[in-house]
Length: 443
Image (tube, rainbow, N blue to C red):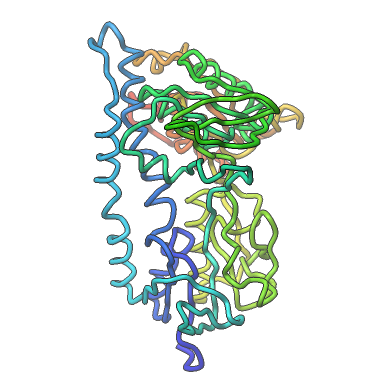
């Protein structure tokens, strides 16, 4: 360690943008510190991905039983209170587990709110901590509507902590969180209304496949109201009145503000040190370096074109470890980054997007997968995919809507990333019968 500073590398935030790279960095001999004001591990393990997929597991089970009705007898229902308790049992040990791994790696975990004093110093509760290099990994937080009565609305973290599911819920927004939580809450018996800012939901996904998911949710009772400009929330006894689009009114039991997520760049002293950022996050170069040469950023707080997802943050954190430990001086080269929305069915995509390929001269292969024998095993009613090939017939993109879309896209990632040709594809023998075998048979 450089004796001039307390740490070689100091991370602000303890999520995946930090710990996946901080641990091997410390194990390589660097003196590493991590500052965290909330739960160790950040959003994903504690009130994001892990919690969400646990709450979704019973939904997936009920959908399967529904498709196999008559073969599987009896109606399955979700006990929300037990579902919530199961979620807590799954995730409650994660902060201590991650914290233990950090400690075992020789990392100092400093609890408290960090503020930049200068480009080498962060203060935590009046204590000054110095470092040669600093990595900002503060992630995103829920956006909150700035309207009268905004304190009556709740965010995604509140939703995943509900021990009793409200009967009537309005969800504001039309992105990942809105659609995933609408799916979960509807399946558990809640009356759901989605107030959309514009005309479409999930605009980053292929519209024809999104329409299939929305149509299915409508059939299940979810209501969608487009171009709904929310203007106020008011308490009405034990209920809440949601005012929108002038004189329109909804009376509900609970409000989820899923109007987006914004970078955590406020109240950490960035202005004081002159670090560049905007509404989309912190500006970095191709080495994840900010305009201040010893300060870097990692994870969702970065202003970037890549999807702001946990795997992207892991990749960035690992890249910084390799850079700081002298294993590379090369700029970061992102691989294919897949994305998925965990509705039921799911929509997943990677590489060239279906909505872009149609206008760029690529070969586009669209398949109704419900006709495939393997998808008929559990009676999938919604299953389609789009494969995109270049002129040499290399797979360069995939988009799928189905109950197994995430597994299909995961299966095909190597073909896209490493540009497999027919020789490589022919060398692969898949387990059979399996979703992988059924998927690769399309190539």
